[in-house]
Length: 162
Image (cartoon, rainbow, N blue to C red):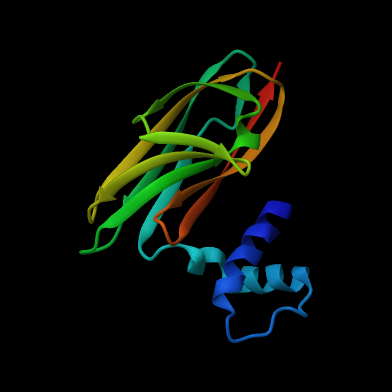
Protein backbone atom coordinates (compact mmCIF):
# COMPACT_ATOMS: atom_id res chain seq x y z
CA UNK A 1 0.00 0.00 0.00
CA UNK A 2 2.89 2.35 0.75
CA UNK A 3 4.22 2.00 -2.80
CA UNK A 4 0.81 2.77 -4.28
CA UNK A 5 0.42 5.88 -2.15
CA UNK A 6 3.98 6.99 -2.97
CA UNK A 7 3.35 6.43 -6.69
CA UNK A 8 0.08 8.37 -6.51
CA UNK A 9 1.82 11.25 -4.76
CA UNK A 10 4.50 11.44 -7.43
CA UNK A 11 1.92 11.65 -10.20
CA UNK A 12 -0.22 14.22 -8.47
CA UNK A 13 2.59 16.74 -8.12
CA UNK A 14 2.52 17.30 -11.88
CA UNK A 15 -1.22 16.81 -12.37
CA UNK A 16 -2.53 19.18 -9.71
CA UNK A 17 -0.55 22.27 -10.68
CA UNK A 18 -3.51 24.61 -10.20
CA UNK A 19 -4.29 23.35 -6.69
CA UNK A 20 -2.35 24.18 -3.56
CA UNK A 21 -1.62 20.68 -2.35
CA UNK A 22 1.00 21.60 0.24
CA UNK A 23 -1.57 21.65 3.05
CA UNK A 24 -3.34 18.47 1.85
CA UNK A 25 -2.87 15.33 3.95
CA UNK A 26 -0.82 12.68 2.02
CA UNK A 27 -3.72 10.23 2.40
CA UNK A 28 -5.97 12.75 0.63
CA UNK A 29 -3.51 12.81 -2.29
CA UNK A 30 -3.75 9.03 -2.63
CA UNK A 31 -7.53 8.98 -2.32
CA UNK A 32 -7.85 11.69 -4.96
CA UNK A 33 -5.52 9.77 -7.30
CA UNK A 34 -7.44 6.54 -6.80
CA UNK A 35 -10.78 8.25 -7.43
CA UNK A 36 -9.47 9.78 -10.66
CA UNK A 37 -7.71 6.56 -11.65
CA UNK A 38 -3.99 6.16 -12.06
CA UNK A 39 -4.18 5.73 -15.84
CA UNK A 40 -3.80 9.46 -16.38
CA UNK A 41 -0.17 9.02 -15.31
CA UNK A 42 0.62 6.65 -18.19
CA UNK A 43 1.98 7.83 -21.53
CA UNK A 44 -0.93 8.00 -23.97
CA UNK A 45 -1.86 4.77 -25.81
CA UNK A 46 0.97 2.67 -24.41
CA UNK A 47 0.21 -0.75 -22.93
CA UNK A 48 2.40 -2.75 -20.57
CA UNK A 49 1.99 -6.11 -18.91
CA UNK A 50 3.99 -8.57 -16.86
CA UNK A 51 4.11 -12.36 -16.98
CA UNK A 52 5.55 -14.07 -13.91
CA UNK A 53 4.63 -17.16 -11.89
CA UNK A 54 2.80 -16.19 -8.69
CA UNK A 55 4.97 -18.66 -6.77
CA UNK A 56 8.13 -20.72 -7.17
CA UNK A 57 10.20 -23.14 -5.14
CA UNK A 58 13.66 -22.21 -3.96
CA UNK A 59 16.05 -23.28 -6.72
CA UNK A 60 13.44 -22.97 -9.51
CA UNK A 61 14.36 -21.12 -12.67
CA UNK A 62 11.58 -18.77 -13.78
CA UNK A 63 11.05 -16.12 -16.43
CA UNK A 64 9.93 -12.56 -15.81
CA UNK A 65 8.53 -11.31 -19.12
CA UNK A 66 7.88 -7.59 -19.49
CA UNK A 67 5.93 -6.51 -22.57
CA UNK A 68 5.47 -3.00 -23.91
CA UNK A 69 3.08 -2.27 -26.78
CA UNK A 70 2.68 0.94 -28.74
CA UNK A 71 -1.08 1.10 -29.34
CA UNK A 72 -0.81 4.47 -31.06
CA UNK A 73 -2.08 4.89 -34.61
CA UNK A 74 0.84 6.89 -35.95
CA UNK A 75 3.38 8.04 -33.35
CA UNK A 76 6.50 6.19 -32.25
CA UNK A 77 7.38 5.58 -28.61
CA UNK A 78 11.02 6.24 -27.75
CA UNK A 79 11.98 4.00 -24.85
CA UNK A 80 14.90 5.16 -22.72
CA UNK A 81 15.01 2.51 -20.00
CA UNK A 82 13.28 -0.28 -18.12
CA UNK A 83 13.54 0.05 -14.33
CA UNK A 84 12.94 -2.70 -11.76
CA UNK A 85 12.85 -2.45 -7.97
CA UNK A 86 15.99 -4.01 -6.54
CA UNK A 87 13.92 -5.17 -3.53
CA UNK A 88 12.01 -7.54 -5.85
CA UNK A 89 15.30 -9.04 -7.00
CA UNK A 90 16.40 -9.75 -3.39
CA UNK A 91 14.82 -13.20 -3.71
CA UNK A 92 16.43 -14.03 -7.04
CA UNK A 93 19.68 -14.42 -8.91
CA UNK A 94 19.53 -12.92 -12.40
CA UNK A 95 20.74 -15.50 -14.94
CA UNK A 96 20.17 -13.52 -18.11
CA UNK A 97 18.40 -10.50 -19.59
CA UNK A 98 17.19 -10.44 -23.19
CA UNK A 99 17.60 -8.33 -25.11
CA UNK A 100 20.82 -7.17 -23.47
CA UNK A 101 20.60 -3.57 -22.28
CA UNK A 102 23.14 -1.04 -23.57
CA UNK A 103 23.98 -0.23 -19.95
CA UNK A 104 22.80 -1.14 -16.44
CA UNK A 105 22.91 0.80 -13.20
CA UNK A 106 21.73 0.08 -9.67
CA UNK A 107 20.70 3.46 -8.29
CA UNK A 108 18.18 4.66 -5.73
CA UNK A 109 16.81 1.16 -5.22
CA UNK A 110 16.15 0.57 -8.91
CA UNK A 111 17.95 -1.56 -11.46
CA UNK A 112 17.95 0.65 -14.56
CA UNK A 113 18.42 -1.15 -17.85
CA UNK A 114 19.04 1.31 -20.68
CA UNK A 115 17.27 0.52 -23.96
CA UNK A 116 17.35 3.52 -26.29
CA UNK A 117 14.97 2.00 -28.84
CA UNK A 118 12.03 3.21 -30.90
CA UNK A 119 8.79 1.21 -30.82
CA UNK A 120 6.64 1.89 -33.87
CA UNK A 121 2.84 2.04 -33.93
CA UNK A 122 1.34 -1.40 -33.33
CA UNK A 123 4.67 -2.93 -32.31
CA UNK A 124 5.30 -4.88 -29.11
CA UNK A 125 8.70 -5.34 -27.49
CA UNK A 126 9.37 -8.07 -24.91
CA UNK A 127 12.07 -8.06 -22.26
CA UNK A 128 12.79 -11.37 -20.50
CA UNK A 129 14.73 -11.78 -17.30
CA UNK A 130 15.67 -15.37 -16.47
CA UNK A 131 15.78 -15.72 -12.68
CA UNK A 132 16.62 -18.40 -10.13
CA UNK A 133 14.69 -18.29 -6.85
CA UNK A 134 17.27 -18.17 -4.03
CA UNK A 135 15.49 -17.07 -0.84
CA UNK A 136 12.06 -17.93 0.59
CA UNK A 137 9.68 -14.98 1.00
CA UNK A 138 7.24 -12.76 -0.85
CA UNK A 139 8.88 -10.34 -3.25
CA UNK A 140 7.02 -7.33 -4.65
CA UNK A 141 8.29 -4.48 -6.75
CA UNK A 142 7.58 -1.94 -9.41
CA UNK A 143 8.70 -2.21 -13.02
CA UNK A 144 8.66 0.99 -15.07
CA UNK A 145 9.15 1.83 -18.71
CA UNK A 146 10.70 5.31 -19.07
CA UNK A 147 10.61 7.46 -22.18
CA UNK A 148 12.62 10.34 -20.75
CA UNK A 149 9.50 12.22 -19.61
CA UNK A 150 6.94 9.77 -18.22
CA UNK A 151 6.86 6.38 -16.52
CA UNK A 152 4.51 3.54 -17.41
CA UNK A 153 4.55 1.31 -14.34
CA UNK A 154 3.29 -2.11 -13.34
CA UNK A 155 3.88 -4.27 -10.27
CA UNK A 156 5.48 -7.70 -9.99
CA UNK A 157 5.03 -10.19 -7.18
CA UNK A 158 6.27 -13.71 -6.57
CA UNK A 159 6.22 -15.94 -3.49
CA UNK A 160 9.22 -18.22 -3.05
CA UNK A 161 8.76 -21.30 -0.87
CA UNK A 162 11.32 -23.78 0.48
